[in-house]
Image 1 (cartoon, one colour):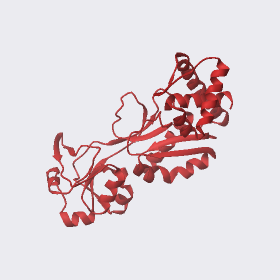
Image 2 (cartoon, helix red, strand yellow; image 1 turned 90 degrees about the horizontal axis):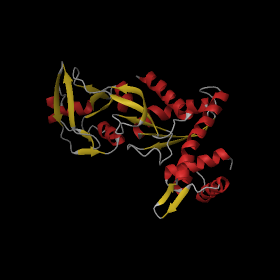
Image 3 (tube, one colour; image 1 turned 45 degrees about the vertical axis):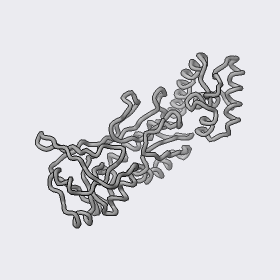
Image 4 (cartoon, rainbow, N blue to C red; image 1 turned 30 degrees about the horizontal axis):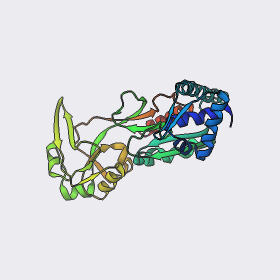
Length: 294
């Protein structure tokens, strides 16, 4: 394994906190990672990691090496990209995370075009509605929606979508159409369990809040979609989540004239590491895609 590859392996071990975690990210065997780090320590003649029953932690020398290695890896990545031409010829592996429903509707259908533009690139897509640990999972860029919980996150806003109260025409035919926010209390609400079930609406400078009742709560956006499309009730979500059904009329926006806060889409990069050129180019690609759909 060459010097750059050895640095990559060491960086992944520090970030994962274990040889097994790094091996999973690198998609190699754990013994190979352990051997690479041992050879690196032997070549440098310094101990880089402290091994204990609680895992691996870098020594003071290991921390210094980790910081310089991150910069060296980034610079090598940038040099390769510059040699190939900015925005073209990406190679290696890019690990992306995104919410499953958003990715299915707005990212995965466009991946063939991205991969066609970069034939030397491999893409791992980690789908999870939760905000996973980017460093531990070896993620290069995460697509997240809403308010970022970590104010120190390295992030870039890619797009915004309106939020709407949505329901199917069949549900509205059965339950009636709400005209003002107060009418929502008489309807079945499909609630995303990770968010508050208090919905705040504004109009003409005023604001009103409605506490929704709902017998069905879901921990993932795909469950919200399925429940709405099964005519179970109405929900509040970004228009992104129902863009096909809004286009064909199966799902309708309600409460025209009342507004809700927009929702933002962010490209989030691992804290403590420079964003890779591959991650930045992918974020640019997603931004272009979303601008085309807004």
